[in-house]
Length: 446
Image (tube, rainbow, N blue to C red; front, side, top):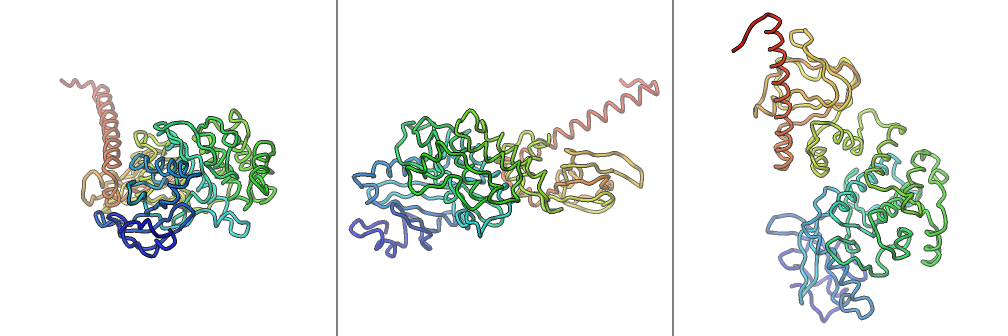
């Protein structure tokens, strides 16, 4: 049912149809130490990926200790890292019959296929992918986890732009011993401090992600070598040529980001993930973007700056992105019409809109303001009491009530809290105005 110790790993693959409670569907990939299957978890009716470590690998006299540490490190993270851009680990089993890890199944491929000159992704898409990696690795670092093996093979791309970082077997965690085992990591992506076997911080992952960024932009590694010894020398002593020399469309601003991420001295490298992600977003300002196609990186950065979302965590903001629709709209366009029935509400991300009733101007709303929220708070179809028209070029976020109803309880709770703050502010302003009006008319209120 699980593993038969008497047969080789290659014979074993065709014989397995079930591992524990997980029903095997197909083999996804196989390496020297493990095999990964797509499987069904019948208890929750979801597809999962099951990575089975070969018993021979764990019992290997020369490398068994290393393989065991890699397995135990990854297994220890089960249920501990919950981020939309990190592959979730659901379960881990280690006993006499089998050693396996059950993970989120990702329907996609790794970034390896986009690291060749003939299959490069658009620069804007590369920036967005790397941006999402920075947010995921920042989340991991804040939870005491350094990946230590960031490379294209460990980053999955699903759909158009959904990424998932996987394989935390080489990770260093605050909950485990900090003694490093030699040989962990991929030489071409190692930081100078990693090849020197020094103590590591999140900045080693910044360097490795810089190598990935370089490769996705150019189709080549920043450091070229024929063997590991030469690679180590390059990493420690040679400066990589700017990506624009290999791909002219790369802006100087992006060259500068790559160069700083790959600096040998950690004091000169990016000090935080936030600093790197901020500069990646800034590059979008100098790249031509489709008029109505707003990158997720830009959306995330906008949400983080809007007061409405101040109590939302980064993970919750990624969930907000999944339940919202973003649009860029020109001046004069009417978003809501008085008397219409709707179930959506809106948050203004940029620009200004006019609020009118019976043709008379009631208010002007600016970035960060919301409107139409009674369609959500009323819990039913709501008749609009005013019209909303774009007064300038605007970016507007639409949230449909039924989409928000499918969000997590914590996200809905934060929306309700944000609306409550808005209502309190509006009542306070209305009370102040009423008091002023009464004072102007010399009316006393007891």
